[in-house]
Image (cartoon, rainbow over all chains, first blue to last red):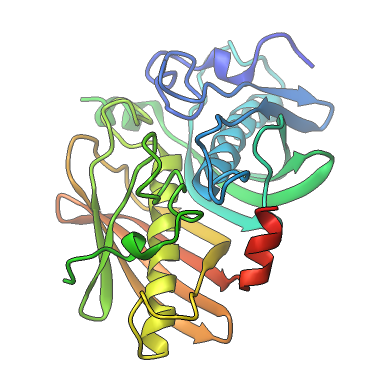
Length: 159
Length: 159
């Protein structure tokens, strides 16, 4: 694994994301890394992130899939161009669609491992699959379609 | 609209859900109601629920789709049996899969309207479509497949 997380390369206006921004003090601040051809992130939900007592609520799991998927897309975009994440031009991705299959209830109180793998890099679109492992068991599978956002569109959104 | 929300009928062990449980003081505590053939829920994210500054982060929107969809499924289950939500036997639903399409960035700082419509009631499975409206514009569309959980399975999960 590299030392700096994908999210540590995000510029300030991305780093406020509740799910993955290092600057959002209320948020989850997830950190994703390469682990060979897969990406990986570890996260332990808070005791109050419950569905039924003792299990993680679905929105949290969807958030982890979403933000880890977008981070994986960003890293994959640079990798596809064979350059580091701190080089220009900057590549920014937003989620176009998210799919989550809840296979089993995900236990609370354990460290979750979120893993990702890029399925397709096509123009501005990157599709990745993600899965969440709790106590060695895959409890959730998901897919994220991320789209690279032109710098001008980001500027327009921030006006 | 009825006076009592779908979620107000949840038993205690469901009412701790971070997304929709009235007993989770940290959570979103969403409230869903019938509005004719559609279900509706209003929710205003907090200022820190950001994606890019000024816009709602995707995980929150996915959570709203998920919990409003599950609530809609529960209400639809009772409606399909032509009985009130406080009658026995109790019907409890969990999300089997969630799909979210982010059509446009969703602005922060405005009341969001989450609407739902049942597409299919088939045995223990209920499929509903949801959409989120901000300032009169649909920004997100989603689909939730909810599955009724046998009471015994709930008991086993809570052991």
